[in-house]
Amino acid sequence: MTPAAPSAAPPPSPTAASTASGYPLTFDNCGTKVTFRRPPQRVLILNGTSVAEAESFIMLGLDKSVLANAQSYGVSDDPAMIGRIKALPTGGLTMNKNFDVPAEQVLKLRPDLVVSTWSGGFDAKKGFATREQLAAAGITSLVNPVNCAMGKPEATEEEKRAYRNQSINSSLEFVALLGRVFDVQDRALDLIGKLRARIETVRARVAGRPAKKVLIAYPGMAMMNANGLPAVMTGGIYDDVIKAAGGVNAFAGQSSDTTRTLNTEQLATAQVDVLVVGQFTPDEQPEAEAAKLFAAYPHWAASKSRTYAVVSDGVYLGPLNAAAVEKISKVVHPGD
Image (tube, rainbow, N blue to C red):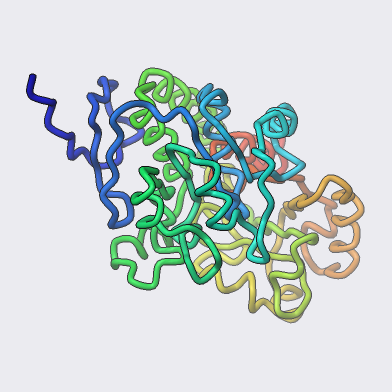
């Protein structure tokens, strides 16, 4: 019997109609040809300082396929998610100095799929297993497609553009891709539909309202800023989440480099109608952090009205964007 020809299908659109995967399934992933002959059963999710991939597996009901998960956050815009992530097996893995699973541990674990949020998760210079090493060991690798350019010096212009222009849709595209890889397209499309409906409900509610200036600041991530200021999130998906909530980023149009380079004067002179405090760790007190920022920047409109919201993982790439959009919209346009 002649085997079926591999599918050359690209990563699916989150609005695509449901079809069976049809194995072997082959497509290009960040310049690497990957082939799935059956749904993966022993998945390793690398850290990459992300939680998007673990949350996507959980929300798609793919928990049982996870052999080991290195992603965690400790706080979430979906409180139930904290325990669900902790319940995923860790495989006894430890991180190296670059905060991810070293090559020897990955190879010893013998997963059938290794998932990374970024191309840098397969960088030998950081002590990680390369995609070529994994393939030689019969292990498939997968990078969240929107992050192909991250940690990939030879990234194409298309990959760089996709990385710069991350959006809520990027989060949903990864859910759709997992649906295809694991042959659970109906489940993926149902989840995408529900998440999109929640966001569209907010968009409809705030449509036509004035777009207030919103600042997303993570005090617990001050290490990301050269001046020791709270990490102010700009560009890409952060702008998209704020826009869906009826606002506009106070630093709209700025690149992600703003997080690193922002200085006190720029923060003091920014127009901020609504402060969004990002919680990074469970022991942080976001209400107290909001008060500190209001005291430090009294000229903000948000400081005068004491207007703020608290988010955690929902403004990042991942399936919880709808939760953050709902939270932010309630303070951007309360009662509208």
